[in-house]
Length: 373
Image 1 (cartoon, rainbow, N blue to C red):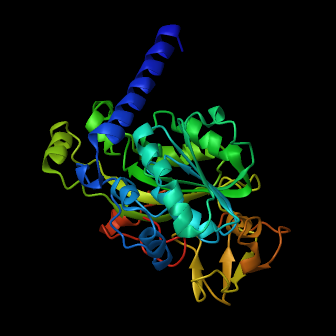
Image 2 (cartoon, rainbow, N blue to C red):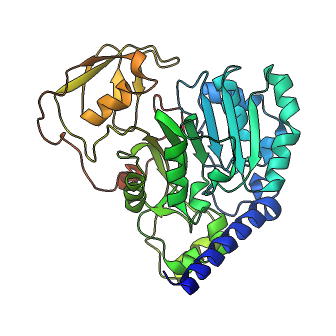
């Protein structure tokens, strides 16, 4: 890269940050000001999430711009980092779920949003009976600039429709991998595209601010995740995004991109060096004990692993390790070892993962996985 090219790239990144900060700090006053439904949560929250939301200050709720409910299961006592926390809605949800012995850290680059989060911190401490949250102003591409964030110090990282707003997504994912403890996970909701978003759309400030132009092509996202150390990204839930704004839709179509589709999706990415690039078969299985709270009958790891209580469930080596080498181990019995390899695990494919792309029906609202998106 030449000096001129590098300077131009840096200037473009700075302009993007400035545009997003202005959009979310000044242009948008509340959720109703959004021009599309990309940064909206349509699904009904799970009961425990709904209860947590009911305890949150109205000023925080009013300035929520996410696309899901991105707090996974089994988080009591955990340390959670929320990237792009905004006014703090998900921080204060997580605060209640991790409990007094847990910790939640919020990071956002928009001072106006963080002001609301901090001004209501005492309110929430009084409401919950403890104060286990902290907020930092900064770029999620530059988490190194926050001294209190140490390598291997976080159990779970969450993010709600924010990573798509970042010009340097690789830096975000690399930092997540570095900050997570072994066996920890990045669990987040975001917007993805059916193909690479054309440059002319990427340069539209409103479409970027509305979480559309910055959306990653789903296969680029999966490849980038693997390059950053997350070897087997798992899709939890997805739903098609209908823009529901005639002017915005017409703009996209007038530019010749009528067939460009967007999806809201929740992924979980485990920090496990033992994972393989593909799902390999070692003849292993797991048996769910039915002990994860609220999921006594069965629990979902992702969109194609729903495990009923007491039933032997064949799994690939990666799924085996995602359960064996994480906080979920105590909830399963494990069958088999690594002595014999039987080839690729049946059904390990590379086509577009979003089931909603086939029939337009959302997969959101299943059993387990935090009731996300």
